[in-house]
Image (cartoon, rainbow, N blue to C red; front, top):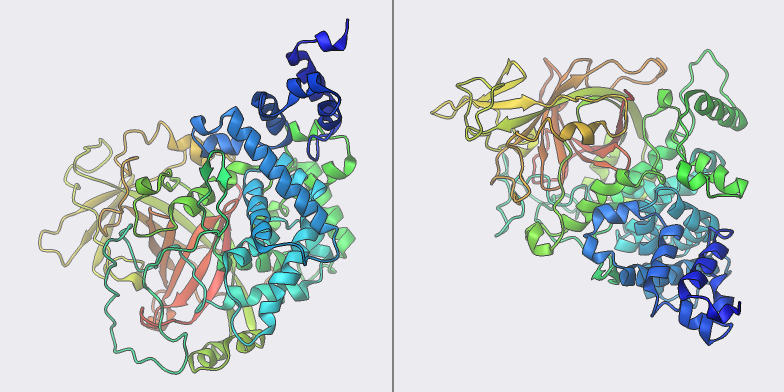
Length: 629
């Protein structure tokens, strides 16, 4: 039978079969067929057969994340085809520039589009996207050249380096590409040099998507600046006064159609990306006991390999592995594992579980503008996942010496002072419970009959927005909370969140359905934080550190069982905690602000509460991770 009598569907099946031997890279085996003659071109061209290229997209890239993040009417065959063409145009250009010795012809618009594409594609990765970018594109080499060419030069000037959207994306990608083998083999000096200024420059770079003093978002008109306890007189330092004015965050400057609509996305906060990158390097070697000799690099790798073979902690995606023939590809996925759980104080970025990035994606899309409601922006709102913070957490805190802070506040060059700073780090462990307000409109059988007062009104930002006169009494399944200064003494009931399912990564998501359906928390129509009231309370305390932490590690200022209380801002998931050790002075009070970023890292800053809210206080950074259940 002449081949030209074949139905177009059969020709397309032949083309798809040819691609089975080429899982990585663009669909080049189809090109000779397209150029054969008019019959093959008519059977295979993208204009007439977008469904064919939609299938190629699904074979070349992971699609589960885009199904969750975009409405179904945007994921048409035509949009998938156009994104396939745009994506391979970017990735092919990046592959060529990764092998190039000069970037003079690499225009800024192309660089920014490529950088943005790499970030977005990695947040959608369930394994295949990571292989395309790292194995085929050689993204690590491309990113090293980008950082050397466009980030490092800013660190050679006297000014603090700018946190442009491109720099934010580059530092974020640098962390996302970390695996323990690369961390053991890289030269740590340049990484620490680049990231330390973004990490410790707490006075210059944002830690939140909207000022941490706000509890009601979006805001219109802008709220007044909190009243100072003492007159604040600016000194010669440009960083003395804290910038608490809400502003729209800059979006990534390149706007291209992404599945049929412009991609309006804020870059990740560079302070978080730099902190995670720095801490990954610090954590690269487990903390062994003093009585054991410190292991060599090859011994550490052997230790991790043995642990994961014994405990089944392999991070690769089986469906992807079954399609790979190259042993190097499989080895890459093995390298993207986290450290053995017994040594975890930070969780490496997951490139095989895209749902770990869903909350970050929603925050970057819907929390860029503090003046506009999410519905006006046309995106699904960010939603706090109940139970995310409940449990036991271990982490590491890092802070510069106090002399560095005073020098910067007195007007000395900030960048030079930070580079010469003495940096200390400590280990801390906490346990938290989450409590959700139950309003009077929803009478629940578990709530005390008399406790249906309104939620607490947000108050002092330096006390995690909790009024100083807050009184708390424990009740069955929750807390009775009231403000003793209010005349009516309304008592509110905050119900404790309890995890139904344990032992799986989906525990929080699965337990949030069904068990909470009748609870009157945030509805899909809510766009405000109820005008400055507290819907979510956090109650916890410091706990003994893990047994693997050597005794030589210094104790933090917080003693065991020191009380911790705080709130969660539902607009963007900002966690604000206040800690105070019993019997300590005002200087021992600390305020902690941060987000759950990436695959479960609680990252942010802590500040000394003795400094007024209107000025930049003495601050450090921290990263914590929940203990494995």
